[in-house]
Image (cartoon, rainbow, N blue to C red):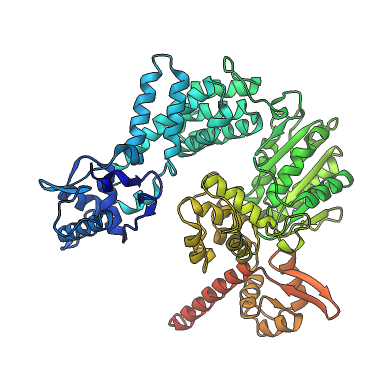
Length: 626
């Protein structure tokens, strides 16, 4: 084998990457990368020209497609073996009858290495070599940076080519999780179990093993919630209830332990003697720079029975409320009930949904008939689109159930006379307080999330300033910061920074098991827009013509001649601030208003869309009459 071939490393189980020794190789434009991807997936075997045409272009092949394949291969040869003189025999991509063959050191190609590890692990399992099989499967799992093979799916026009690889990952992941559970290593296999459950929602074995992994690591409430979610999916998609294996796994969760499985990791969350938790559980990561907010929320709930946490979209209202509820759980004898309201479309469905969420609390008929002998904490999460319905339900519960406290998260308060309001802000580096210099809260959040999606990422002197600038560009908004960090699964930090000129378009990493309004910044902001009436929407769009920071007089000028009639600027500014689309500061000159930079960008888009609609209406012919 030539030195060049031995030094070449190919990673395809994620973003397609090639290295010659330590030096990355730029494979060129998309179609050229696609040709290399086909060869890499069939390394050691000849790929015919016809197969390449089908996979790279599909049925819409240009007339020059065959010649383009030869051109791309010639360019790839020069990239992969630049030391070879012209017309010399190529060692890495060689010509074969009717096609080409890529020859690699199998240890340096993740696709072939994964197959080797998986087959070797399966040889150990029947012979009782569980520990060795688990080690091999763990090494195989680490090779997969993206089980969905997102980039390859984009490059290649024949999805069937990738199906065998995905099935092999699924089989290996099932073996890895099952073996890890048998060995009592639930905490090690939990991330893979989660990804497996997300990618295989109809696979009963995958779901059962995820429940077992959650239960063994003390996340019993999350296991119960996940089972309820899968039960709904199975009913909606297939019209069937959970099967025997999944139901048995759920029974073991309810019983407080998976029978016959060693439990190396236990926490108080799995203790059946604790007050119950119903609904989505708190996040698994520590809240960053929210100690003051947590302390305030706990203090307010000790004094008030209704607390609304408000703030701009993506600032972390839900995370704060869930963490506060988790910390208060042992103080409420009847437990915690969480209702995620973002998926409730019809206002009249809120009260029945809350009643269903209370399933298991004794003596519950309607929300106003909660038990009067136990203290229950109810969290209504993301209700901004159901304000009137929420007011009615909260009034019913708080006035008729003296032992119930209610926490609401919303982009605007409910406006009830007995309501306490805590306004949450972004992770501003200006008030980081105890944070060490150069490590503001948003930067620490970025580093933590980046380390989860890209285990090789490290925050250091060489990139800290770049990350800090990126976070400032994103207003230190937790949702935006986390989305940016998640993009590192497919991009380098330099690439991410270059693409953030338009974060509303660029920040859309895959976010499964998240509410729709948390899957992109545009979706998060559009949710706020949908909660505005026509006049508020027009006024919000017109604010894009002003600087981000302005005074009342500027707003009055911008809103003069409003499409929906005269605008009371003071009342409108108050309304938009209540809905967390503006913030207000007071100085000697009076109130000063401002918008987050990301919201200002969004207002520009809304304004341009409004202008386009007006142009269409003006250009439309007048019909009718008589």
